[in-house]
Length: 337
Length: 242
Image 1 (tube, each protein chain N blue to C red):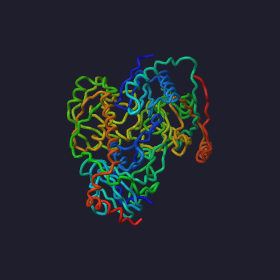
Image 2: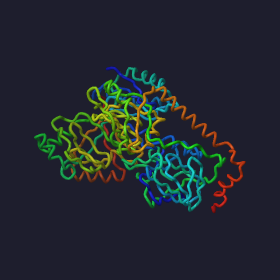
Image 3: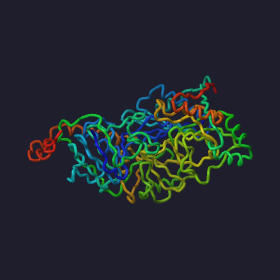
Image 4: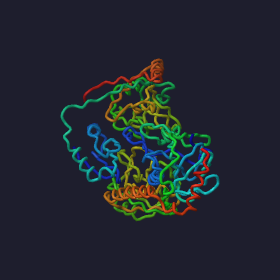
């Protein structure tokens, strides 16, 4: 018992934190684009940190539940509804057999996530359940989900303690511009002083060449010293490479493991969600920070997630407000299984 | 040894640059360090990407800070790695050259001003060092292709090249690990799966290993292919010291 895909949406895939440990063999990591939204979705359900979720892009899927499950929806606002009624986000939701969860198009952001308390019945391939679209490996048959696909749940887990406390503030996704903090390098010495100045002081526009592999930006020419071709080396999540056309390309979840263009900087991990949630024509600026600052931001975010975890494990004030509680509990009591 | 540079590549990766050239000795040093790191199980290391003359290490900043990683890497690259040759593996890869298996072998021969047989002989008469893997799962960047058979890529890349195709692209030769678009001149095909997700070790070859192409006829190709399908084929591996 699990979920049936009634509509696949534009690009809905099974993802987790990615398939690490095989990059030396040319096998890309893949995994979720927006790690923060992913972590919050799993956190709301006490799922393991790396439990697989569905990631959808710009137009979300429609799912029919064939078993009871608790879910959490995070990321951009895809105007989710359950049986036609608006569904809350960043909140644990009880789903009954027969319920239809429908996502529309992204009103804010561009990527959404849904996690399941029953865990998606997807086999682990090389240590991960994530989909690698390029090598058609992992996830659901190595491809995006389509109407008619069916995914079982691995376990029955229709109950979570502190159910009513499991709601968090929504992250904001409605900005049309973002400043990405970056750690300069590893090859910023390949660029002229003027080139680096241009990079850090200009506004860049997200082009339509924006997929899970990378995001091409348009804007002022970033001048290399001589050539931006280098002997191919490894690429990190968020590497900003600048080919000879002088426009930055930010490499994302489905990046190749290696590449032959100089990388002027790398986006701080905590700011990658800001980029991957943008749409075509949105504006991007870059701000240089040190690697120490970037690591501190990363650790601060982990602490913030720990605080969220604590918060959802305390009895909530709502319990005292019977009416609200009753309203939210109705779904539990009308369950047929 | 040239200057070794250790630099941050964001908050979760560190890059060690061993110089700026494609050289078997530099590359060998990287292979040794990767092996050393695997043996030492350095805390916090998530993944490694060895390349021609650099090594990118992904790590978890929750477990280890940049300063700590920097110090560890500095100590590691300063270890004197000399003393004794290193063991190497040479994988013998059977290849059926020409005909429908290698539709561009005529182009390669014509470009080189040689016969097809001579092209095969040249291609299969040396061991190629695997400098790195990248681009596709299991795709090996090989060094040392004989200059006489360097051939420009196709002007119009093919939409689909079958897994197992062996080809030449400019000064490089290699094997396509899975079906993929590509612009290389195809000269033959191997029945060996360099990438098989169903296998315990999905990827057959590693950086630092060598490949030797062994010409086989169509009958032998089909015989090996059947064994591969039944999971009963193992490549001949020669061990040597370099």
